[in-house]
Each structure stands twice: as C-alpha cells, then as structure tokens.
Length: 193
Image 1 (cartoon, rainbow, N blue to C red):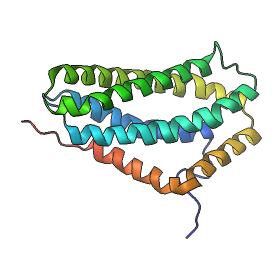
Image 2: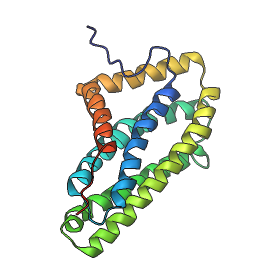
Image 3: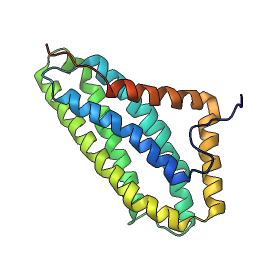
Image 4: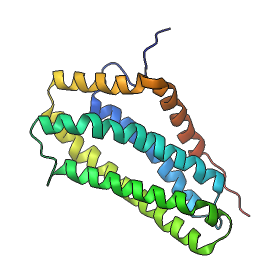
C-alpha cells in the first residue's frame, strides 16, 4: 500500500478537489439547519460541528484556497482587491466570526440561557446562509475563472501543493476523519425532548 494520500482521483483538477470538499461541507450545513429546527440546543452536535467547521471547512479547505489557489490566481493576473478573491477572503473572515460566536455561546445556550441560545441560533443561521452562498459563488464563478486562468502546468503545481498540505503532519488521516465526521453529523438523530 502506498503512503500517498488518495483523497482525490489522479486526474482531478484543483477546482474539482475543492468542489468535492464543498459537498462534504454542505452535509454539515444541512445537518446544522436540521439542528436549528429543534427546540433545544444539542451540545454534543454543536461541539462536533464546531470541530468540523474549524478544522475541515476552515483549516483544510479554506487554507487550500488562501494559501495556494488565491496566490496562484493573483500570479495569473486576477487582482485580490476589488475582485472575487477579495470577496472570498472577506467571507472567510465573516464565517470565522460566526463560528466564534457559536462557540462563545454554546455552553450557556445548551444550559438553557435563552439569550445565548438566540445569539447562537442567529450566528448558526448566518453561517449556513453565508457558506451556501459562498460555495455557489466559488463553484459557479471563481472556480470557472480559475480553470480558465490556470494552465495545465499551474494546475499540476496546485494539485501537488494540495497533496503536500494533506500529507503534512498526518493531515491525510485527519481529512478522512473529518469526511467521516460529516457523514456522522448528516445522520445525527436529534432528541425530541
């Protein structure tokens, strides 16, 4: 068995890798929407969802975009400021702010504090809405632009950079664990009590 990370097919493009990760993230967004329909805050669900959002959506996925894709697009002539890259970076920061607010209010909300629960619910709704729109912009605008702007050699370099990031410090195993966690969260059964 190879030591290679095999998280994507050999002929995948960098944007396809990112789109595949979007599909994983959307499972957790859907599950979060379901969680918000319940009368009480499920602490365990939100703790696991926060872990996923911080470490997969942001730490793995957004890191690939911010550290690899966006600089490659800038090198190809797509400006950061006033263009789609700047918009995506701003939305990544907005998402991080929503995640911090959810985390900051989880304990009190799960304990029955109605104010904290309202803040958490509003932040979680805001995060889900932001990320859904963000994913649509990336899939249908930014990634189309990237596929046009980056030649085959640049795309190979970008894929290699993604692979290095996945293999560093055991991240390949972590990636697989977070994909499994997304599946677990998507099948979460919420208490009706």
